[in-house]
Image 1: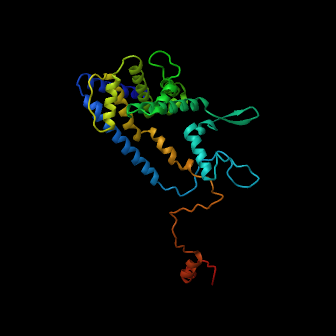
Image 2 (image 1 turned 30 degrees about the vertical axis):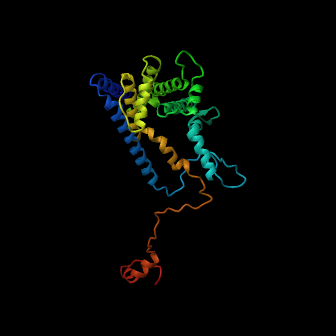
Image 3 (image 1 turned 120 degrees about the horizontal axis):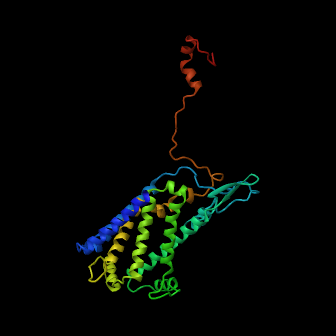
Length: 330
C-alpha cells in the first residue's frame, strides 16, 4: 500500500506538469518559478537542518565501534573501525562516504555448525547502494554542462568516458543505465524481501519512484523524443544568470523532467535523503574513540551542594535522640 501511494504521488506530479504546460501553457511557472522556489527551499532547508544538527551538544565520547580500541600496547588496535586519532577518523569517514564500508561488515549474522556465530555483510545492498550513489553523482556532474559556458574540458572528458561504449546515436551513457538498474534493484528489494517490505514506509518508496521517473524522463528525452537542446541550454543559462526567459520549442517532456527534479530538490531537506549532510555530522562516525586516553567531562555538570549524613545528624542530633532515633555520635 505504501508503494502504491508513493507511485500515485509521483504520477500526480507528472500529470501536474503535463497538464500545466500542455493545456494551461504555464511555461513560466514550470520553467522558471518552480525551479527557483525549489532551489530556495533546498538551500534554506538543508542549511537550517545542518545548523540544527551542528548545535546539538555531544558531551560524551560515543563513536560506533566495531573493533578493538587503543588500549594496552600488546593488543592490536583496529585503527579504521575504532580510530583514536583525527587521521584515523578521516580515513574512516572517507571509507564510509565513498565506499559505504559499514554496509560491508557485520551487518548480518548466522549460527553455523559447531555451534559458531558467524558475521557477514549485505553485499548486494552494498553493491546496489554504491552503484546508485556513484551513478547519480556522475549524472549530476554531467548535467553541469547545461549550466556552464564554455563547458569545462573535464566535463567533456567525463562524458566521453561515460559513453565509451558508443552504442547507437546518441551514445549510450553508462551512468544513466546503472542509475536506472540500481534504483530498480533498490525498489524490488523492498518489495520482495518480506523483512524489508515490513519496515518500508511511503517515505522509503517515494524518493525511489521520484528518482526513477527523473531517470526515465531523461532517457526518453535523450533517446526517443528529441528536445531542443539549444533552447534547454538557453533556459538553464538564464536560470543560472538570474536572467531567465522561456525559449520557444522546448518539449513538454523537458518540463516534466524539470518539475520532477524540482520536486526532489524541495523534498530533500524533509526526507531521509538528508543523510547526505548528516553523515558528516554523525558523532558516532566523526569522533575518535580516545576515551581511554582522554577524560571526557560533561559540560553540563555544575557544582551540586551535598548535604551529607554527618551534617544532617549534626543539624538534628538532639531531635533525633528525643525521638528515639539512633545516632552515630553522642
